[in-house]
Structures are given as structure tokens and as C-alpha cells.
Amino acid sequence: MIPVVAAVIEMQGKYLVCQRPGNKHHGGLWEFPGGKVCSGESDMDAMRRELSEELNVITVEVGETLFEAPDPGTDFLIMFKPVKIIGEPQPLEHAALSWATPLELVGYRLAPSDEVFVHRYLIKN
Image (cartoon, rainbow, N blue to C red; front, side):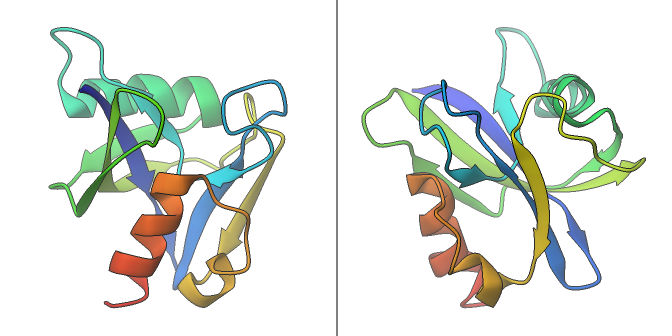
């Protein structure tokens, strides 16, 4: 499996989700931001690189994995991790950004692994 980090960024009870561009895998669906961990790269290094590229923010802390889920139809294993950032997120590679509560996220068209995370982790906790 190819490791992928997904940033669980929380602010005042709301979580940051990003809408994937229409031309990408899971296009138009919402996801927690992040990306593939390159060979020899730590989760922190991957998160710093991905969030800088995608959101123009600085990653200051990455916690332990909260939840893991395979991405159906791919070799990706998505690892959802709590992340603290500095800066105001900007959608550099996504169609849109949104801050939503766990219950609001239920109404979003989420990517498959992200939907499992919301229902099995955020809603239950």
C-alpha cells in the first residue's frame, strides 16, 4: 500500500475540507487535504510539503494517526492525522475550501475514505 497523509485541521469545532478538481481521481468530491508520502519522507515532511503546495500554510504539528482507511480502487492507504497550521488556507490546487462540523460533513459528497473517517471517527467521538 502507498501511504497517504490526510490533515485533520480543526478550528472552533469545524474541520477543513477541500473539493477535488473535476479532472482528478474522485473529482468534485470533498476530502481532508494532504497527499502521498514520498520514499524516505516522514509523515511530518510529507504534510509540510503537501499543505504548503495545496493550501499555502505552514504545518507546525502533526499528531499520531487517528484512523486509517484504504482508498477503494487504488493502492493508497489514507492516514488521517491531527494537524496544526499557521496561515489562512487558500485553495491553490482545489476547487474550493470549507470549514464544517462533523454533522455538516455528513451532507457533503466526500471521497470514499474521507466518508468512512467522518462516520466512524468524527461522528462517534
